Length: 328
Image 1: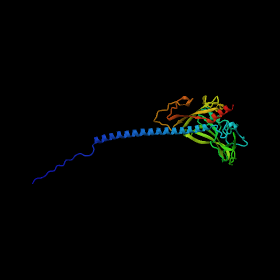
Image 2 (image 1 turned 90 degrees about the horizontal axis):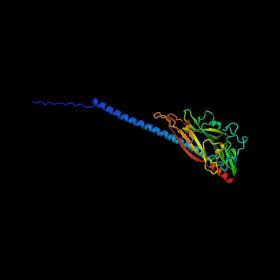
Image 3 (image 1 turned 30 degrees about the vertical axis):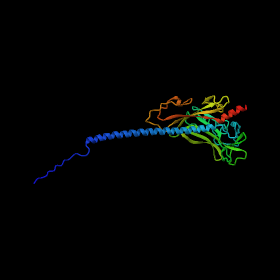
Image 4 (image 1 turned 90 degrees about the vertical axis):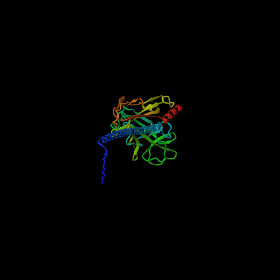
């Protein structure tokens, strides 16, 4: 009787130490590559997000300034200058918080449709309602006066209007009654733009405006309008011969010269709200027309910055100058 002998062969299975170490090393390389790509993409995304927000804030700031400047000196039915609008005086038209220097009835003086304080001059020397310490040092301030683009027959109590008849008008504090037949009421607009920083050190474009407190006119702060606006600068195109075409551009015009401005170049310097510490220090020097921001020195921080600009035509002043030239 024969016996069958079975031989069983055992073969090694699984992963050895060498293979495991090779796999770990390869896995580390793959993980490092994915992580590096993620970090780079995240950095690019953050940079694009900062740039997009800066561009949007700049666009909005330029839109506010350009739209208001284009309306400067518009007096509705009064086709000539604001000198043809009568202020009834403090006995009839009072204001609880004016913005002119002491003793000056500023808000209800429509002959000054624009006033500009160039950076480096203290805004509160021209506008008392911008108190010291509430604005960013070394920045500009701009005031604009005009009436709303559309008249109304239902004026709101407490608001100030220019009531026109023919080519003349009067400032009134409405009591809410309807506009008399044959007359037109145009809401009187006064805006003052300036820059201030918040508690986090972020600069904002702000605006004070003529409104009401109950039934009494007053100038109040509208608050923060556009984030990151570090500076705005304006060069006014001055018409020296009355033909409606600018002969020179000035960034420090007198009040008299401003009454002959027919265009304006607006510059805004926009800063990101936070710093990018992965980027090198910002050693760029920014110029806004004829203004060297920061004294012509680099900021040496890690904020992103850009300069945006636009030009606006001051049609109302232009028309008034041409009209004056045609009647003289």
